[in-house]
Amino acid sequence: MRFSDKVCIVTGATSGIGRATAERMGAEGGCIVVIGRDEKAGADVVKTIKKSGGDAMFIKTDISNPAAVETAVQQTIDAWDRIDVLVNNAAMMTFTPITELSIEDWDQVINTNLRSVFLFCKYCIPHIKGGAIVNVSSVHAYETTPNVVPYATSKGGMEAFTRGVSQEYPRTKVRINCVAPGSVDTPMLWGNPNVKNGTEKIDKKNVGAPEDLASAICYLASDEARFIHGTTLVVDGGLLEKL
Image (cartoon, rainbow, N blue to C red; front, top):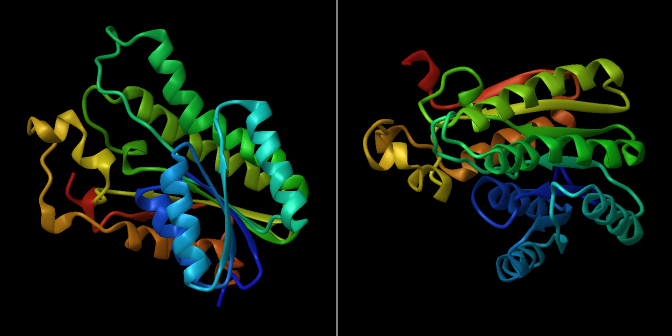
């Protein structure tokens, strides 16, 4: 029970990798703060976690809004008086060539994928004592495809952010690392127009399950990874070796 009585905030926790992570941490005894926008899905995740023996609450949050994030963190402190783990997982993509991309769409991706990481770290770190942060990056930080420049940029920035923050705090205060998924069986993957039209070819036998990523995230968030700080674990089934 690696997360017994630990308070864990997971963003984007109502589907895909975030949901699998929240449910895994809850099953291992955690008190999970489920961050998302879908209240129905959030209630379902909370129900699943409680049924497995953990505790949980859902907080509907605009993760790009500083006041909303600060409020969510304060609600966590009010409920459990501590924060042990933060998983920054929420993300979105656009699929437009850069010269046709609106400034509003660029800002939305960067704010959702990168600004939110800054905001949650800013407001959570003062409450973390000997805990861990895991940011969910992507293989797009290294190798990418056409028309997803804001997404790739946000993930590259996330990894630079993680390295920088690791230099500001010792691992005894807070460990911060990234997990970089490859192709994972989520709505984001199958809704990608590049996948639908064949520009990005996906072999289903090389697609991971959300639970595969949850395992990696939970490892980095646990005390088992106490000597890992400021790095990225690529979890992609060997995808980058083939690109």
